[in-house]
Image (tube, rainbow, N blue to C red; front, top):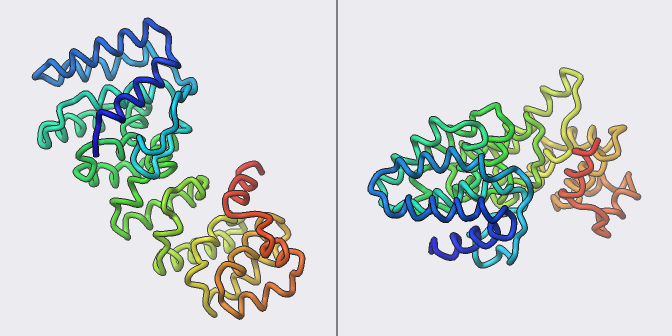
Length: 289
């Protein structure tokens, strides 16, 4: 993966979004980092970036497609995050030294510094070497940090082993994060995740608590007789979003008994056939309620 086009993409966005003095400071720090044989200029600049850049939105002057790695969605990045990403990409990409510097930043950085680092994982030239760190980062209870890894980020779907991937998705469900923002979710659905999701739903029901509608998306390719009673319960729910999710899961599954069950709900069946809504719509609908 070529780093120069990514650096230029971020640089242009910051130039269009930040104050001229802030952008001048950033350019000066970048030169110091590249010229130094020590990581000290990087550590100092990375920390001080918050004095020059804020958490306001970025003015993207060109589309990310073709410039950023496939699946990277910069839509939620702010100016401070992008500035810190740009600074990281100035480090010499020598494997051992590079990993050591990044590991130190992950261990000592504050919440927003970690957010920038985790969101930038797919941009790094030696990204695979940070897999243990990314897996460890998913254990956080800080939603800002967890979201940076789990949402809008193709890194987990590309690198995480199945067991770690499943834990990430389950934690997103537990924290009620929007599943539709998890990159590669459909492609990495698996029978173990479907079974664990069902167990989680049963625990929620037993405690008298609601289940987020998006979870039924994870069962679609594995729909079978063991899930029919769950589907019946969801389709009969009082909550409209939950009903829609059950209908969409039944319709997309291709499992004949599930589709037969859906015929008892002709309006929902027709809505699915006409693609009136999708999983993203249901995720957005749930988050608004």
